[in-house]
Amino acid sequence: MVKTENKNILKQLLLECKGIEEEIIKHRRALHQMAEVGFELERTYSYVFSALEEIGLTPKRCGKCGIECSIWGDKADKDTKCILLRADMDALPIKEETSLEFKSDSKYMHACGHDMHTAMLLGCAKILYNHRDKLHNNIKLAFQPAEESLMGAKDMIENGVLENPRVDYAFMLHVLTGENIDTGTIIMSKSEVSAPYATMLEIKLEGKGAHGAMPEKGVNPIYPISKIAVAIKELNDSARDITVTLGQINAGETANVVPEIAICKGSLRAMNAERATWAEEHVKSIALRISKEEKVQGSVDFYSSCPCLLNDKELAKNAQKALCQSLGEKHVTLLDSGGGGGSEDFAYISHRVPSLMLAIGAGKKDNGYIYPLHNPKAMFDEKALAYGACAYATLAFM
Image (cartoon, rainbow, N blue to C red; front, side):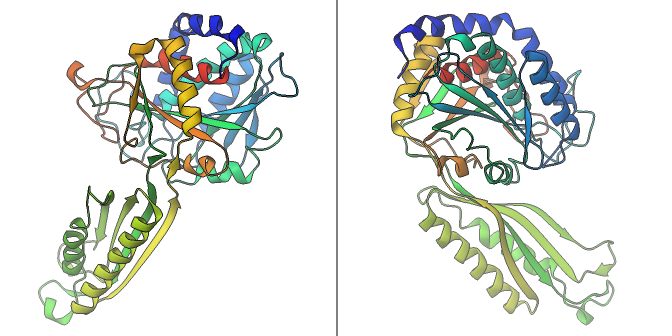
């Protein structure tokens, strides 16, 4: 619960965040332009590290290229809690197709809005540093790499991000675009599970190469990989909360040669472990059955997985009350269902400490933001940045 003396602070937080809105936008645009992926975040890491130092904080490396930074509350006592606020920093390996002046200068793009998350948390860091004399909690900021590959949170946990001091609660925020949600509106879920289990998958078929004019002398793996792709599509089942998506197929080097190898990669998601096991078994069964029928050697590998993300119901209730005070009730929406189909490796943290995932509108479809997350034309409404920074800061005063 929010301490009585902090209620007045909450009421002024949004105004303060809007007061540094231009600075937050500047951070977002710089990060957007330097988009990098996975653990290879040299420019992004340096930018965020320097921005935290300019505020007056003392950041430190955590793991391969994560950043951890603490803000100690001056009013901390024996009952003090340590609250983790997390933002992810990595982009996606897709080429940007927007007309933004600050579009990515690399072959990668922040099509999932992680540049927005990082800029919001940098804005929050400045606000909290200025209010450290009023903070009853100790705050740990975590800027995480490799969320898209579902490996970054685990790396930071293994390198102590939840210790020294031990984290009591953890929060994350994710932007939404291409939906009919007002910009700046916080979406929370009553559901215990707010993001599904996820795993990446790879199916590899080995045939026999031959001349394109004499295909009967070879075994072409392209045809069975196509059959497998069509069959796997039938596993998608909204009633079972199962989603299997193939996003990449590679085979061959030229048009007149029967290739020896075909590989497809994708992702599998399910809302609980039982359904995930069922889906994985069926993917494997389909792939191996068709491989045998088509006389190719088949293998299936599941890798880079993360569990379901668990919402703490008590945290959700308290966060709703606090956010209504800082943002206003019209900017807070509570849903009965889970948070959607996208997975989040913040889930690893949610299995270690009570946690909460929040979403924020950052581009309403009716206002022209028609492309969804992970689309090369995806755009984000920067008016959401001040609201996101305010939401992060609000959680620090809980």
